[in-house]
Image 1 (cartoon, rainbow, N blue to C red):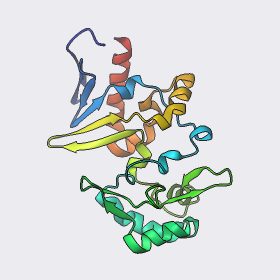
Image 2: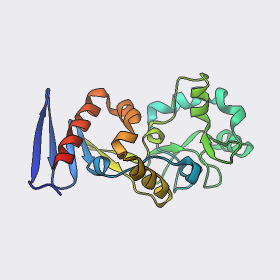
Image 3: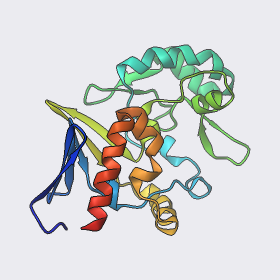
Amino acid sequence: MLDTDFIIIFYTFAIIIISHKNMLQIIDTIVSLDLLDEAFVCDLSVCKGICCVEGDAGAPVEESEIVLLEKTLPAIWDDLSPAAKAVIENQGIVYRDTEGEYVTSIVAGADCVFTYYDEKGYCRCAIEKAFREGKTDFLKPVSCHLYPVRVARYKGFRAVNYHRWRLCGAAVTLGKKQGVKVYQFLKEPLIRKFGEEWYKMLSTAAKEFVNK
């Protein structure tokens, strides 16, 4: 825990505030200090992509991403399971969850419709596969790219939190072994979501946090 109530860091034209309440403010975001303190590196050899299967609903989708998902369908259609294709044809690629937010459609309360299984039996993202193969310029929904970080929008700010999940225990173990924090592991998606300058500010706050 920090010694003072808060620390103010002047960064170019912005102010970073590190609070004793386990959060920091960067521009319009309130960021959990867990991103700076907790270790995390996905260990697919252990989890086998279970995060794309387990859960109460599909992955959060921004409204602007729906059209991108629709455009990507032809490139990934052959990789999808017959059950996933049936769900998409009957329900569509997204639906609204209990909170009224768009999420990816799922198969029988489990697999995201955009998944496939590789030769090892690992659950993988068909959209990302198509992206890596140069078939689409859309990587995948940013919420998937950001996991285990979740972003929630409130009036006047966005909350950026680390989501703890028992299924990701191996990722925590590997992160500790490699000395990689959540914000470091998620550098690419955090920049994708918030921009280079925001990430530089987060890194500056992380150094101050470590020094304290």
